[in-house]
Image 1 (cartoon, rainbow, N blue to C red):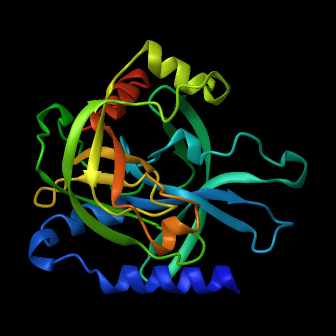
Image 2 (image 1 turned 90 degrees about the vertical axis):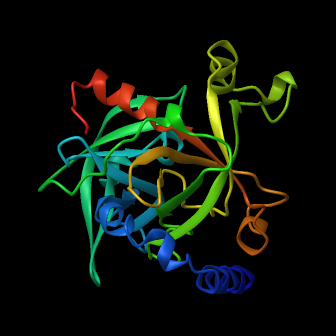
Length: 255
């Protein structure tokens, strides 16, 4: 009951904070057709589809970019669990299977290869041009299975700088954190509200729709539940130029 109340409260927050239309009208038609929800399907599960994050189509329209942490580390192969994406076409939602093409754990980016027909793709911008105070927007599937609704939020670049570890105690260091210490890179901090499920959402210019980053993490003040009812308004994104590098490694062209 408490979870249902929390989700209901989060839905009211989302509905009560619409993005001003005059800021995003040019970009939304360019971005939304490319955005998907990422998750798995397990026939023996109820419901069979479980969505864990967001993603967007790139390259030839059959590749989906998302966060590496959105991809489950293990699948129930014995019961035919498969990775895929949920695509919304009007009121109709369809789950399509995909395979992992490549994972960049250093920058928390994953590339999926989608089965079936290609999707409309986004255009990547040059994330090196980002400056503090610049207005940006993100579109994804917050709260995943609970809402199953694509939502757009806006914010601005608060800072751009090296990623900072949440703790320095050795027992809290994992392989990904150690790698980031050895290979530091800049991350985008946003003054924007994101929710669980927004991981993998495109971060883009509100006028051109060019993607400048991918939502990676949300600062949570207390529990995950509090991220729904009392979001911190601090969100982090990985610069889009790392996505371009991943596409180049797979010999994919991207405008």
